[in-house]
Length: 404
Image (cartoon, rainbow, N blue to C red; front, top):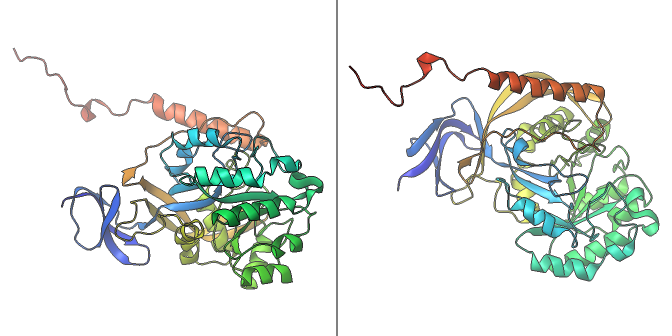
């Protein structure tokens, strides 16, 4: 067998210096001296499984973004859409999934309307139809890996934890976990955490609004509720994350909650979020586990490793050491001792090509500084592409003239 691709000489996470071979879209071997039809030298780089972002929004609606223009430069090969679609709107998400290069498993919103608007999807309990959710999950089990419920005052109104109870019942019937968004009370955090099960996920675990630091958070953590970062535009505070890590409540997964209002800041992307968690006190090994094998286990996904036979979802990184400024959702600043810069991203052994992102939707709030930076980026790209790629010395005469 001749391998299709070999990434040669890199520092493979958890294995030391080795080559990684790919054949027919899967990992064929990891070790020294591998050969293949195509060999790329990645010496001096870190090689990891493709990252799995457990909380993103790529479906149609208020929050959604295109994943491919971010994925190719950030190493994220699996984007879990966390509740953008409910039973009424799942067809729209399926159309998105069919037209992207990355993998997009989904969490079904317990509210059948999904996230077509900014908030409020569970204020009308008629939308939180548990039987419909069960039918939808069973019909679309290839796509749906769990249930998403947003539980904060704006989203549920006077309904308290009832949408969560319905989400838990639907998830129990289908044997899948629930991801719960926490934020501004009511309902109070203690009431939410008390009914979550082992293997369920609390996202925005370092929220500056919910601040899950007390006895209820400890009880939930100890019985196996999984803590997920879910940074977002308002779901991550350094002081809360640092206090949790200091208390032994280390996040199981690190995700971005990347969406239309966070992709231009304060989140930017998953590698930046990983650097923030290193600044907060986690090790590089911990943040890699929290963005690969841990999210794969949480949802029963096939990726997250470089084991032989696994999908050849691979990320190649330059790791810079120094002191790099990072900022949370509340403009608190820390310094990270490292920065991860993606050099290549492969999905099923195929290198993702560069993609330029679309302009922000008109409803996305941006600062003057963000608008100016976006304009500069557009101008930089225009100027770069306006210059001929090479001069005469870099060309070949494709159709030579006859010699006289």
